[in-house]
Length: 172
Image 1 (cartoon, rainbow, N blue to C red):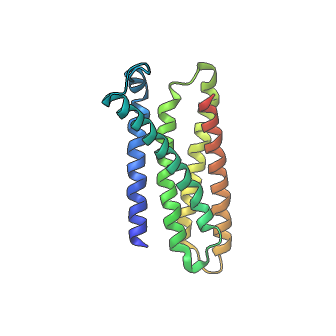
Image 2 (spheres, one colour):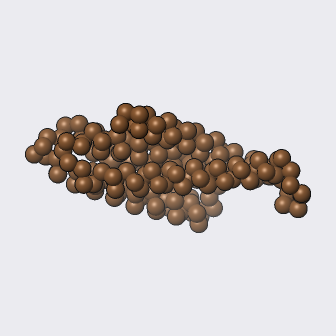
């Protein structure tokens, strides 16, 4: 399990760095992209590969985040460490998405910025509550396990809802 957690953390960290780099360089890369009319060139192929990698990284992050609760919701008290590991990996993936969203906020249309700011605030608050509920797993007892898990589920649902709302606002 340690290897799996270590691998998950490494992958999440790599995704976070990749997304941060790609999100921060989006305008520069878009402006410098090879022309579509050019014949195949190393630069054009590299550009296409970079776009595919970014899409793949985003999909992997989304999948890791959505899988965390699915893998954890039916866990028993004896499996609480596995739940914590899954949720910590999801937190790292969420942090990568938050970095990406923060980079996109400045490119939003002026009239959308207040709604985006409100959505970002909700994401930050939901993220904090989620972190508290994940940390509460450490103090759970066999008697309180179902209650702690239910609170974690509520925090998880709030976080995913806030994240979806922010992502939608950034797309418009």
